[in-house]
Image: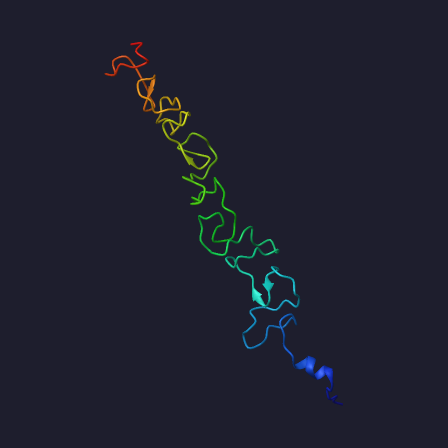
Length: 157
């Protein structure tokens, strides 16, 4: 026995729309999860992907800045970049040595330099008095000494 579809059922059966749970419309839909919830992996029948500017609520993305470039705070995999992750974030980091050890040449993703007030650079500095004044006991992060050819230590030698 066959039944003929009539009335509103026919119209409903023939209408293929986003949200009906079926990927259709000859490729116009990338996905169709049968709901209207945004950022759940399928938004408006378009697949949510890293780089689309929307953070999915599926937990697959920590960030999404609208591109797939690393080094801008949000990686190409939509993972938040941070100091110590081994990748230089061009926005906030001068250096990135992949650790959180201070005074090893890169401290808190800022280059250790002579005159920053901390003896650092993995032993390259003998002293660091926080300035770049010569002949004050610590010149260019080297300890002034009698016989170095420069009158230093505030004229005490």
